[in-house]
Amino acid sequence: MLIYIIRHGETDANLEGRLQGWNNNPLNESGIRLAKIVGQNMKDIKFDKCISSPLIRAKDTARLLLEESGNDIPIETDERIKEISMGEWEDRDFVSLKEEVGEEGLKPFFEDPFDFPGCPGGETIKTVCERTQEFLKELIKKDDDKTYLIATHGCALRAMLNFLYDDPTDFWHGHVPYNCVVNVVEAKDGVGKIIADDKLFYDPKDAVDRYSDV
Image 1 (spheres, rainbow, N blue to C red):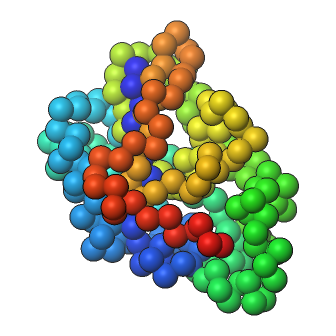
Image 2 (image 1 turned 45 degrees about the vertical axis):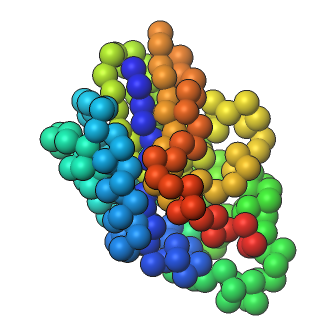
């Protein structure tokens, strides 16, 4: 079994430094372009099944990738692989949040996420880990010979793979995953391992970390 897990393409909220959470923002022009490029570079891969977060930015990323790679299969959705809910902070930009809650109020989300209490009305990292890992472990246990495409989000991707990382204490695995980055999990006998870590199927100059200065 091979499981390809992709973070969605760029949205205007990504570009403008706003927290998205469960907001249903569409891909912008750059996000569409990268999703298509990734698909074009996956033409040798035959996907048997596709499962996406129900949020449009993830679904459209999956749709474009499948179209460009020549995979004519339906897209299923699963609520468990949605992005973290940011509660009252959704659609807020980092600059105004820093002014409101102070730098120390926001930094723990990136520097010490497991101890971050969550945004007001939102989820904790632990909660996101529980629901996303339940999804991935359930998939791994199928132990079939199929190839899956999973479309999700930055925080949800890191949460989903956390139990497979060499150092699970480093939640962000060095950094927030780039838009349209792909991780590949190989599963045998009900056990998964990462065989491609944050793989880029596009020009590295287009890989932008918009959270490095937060």
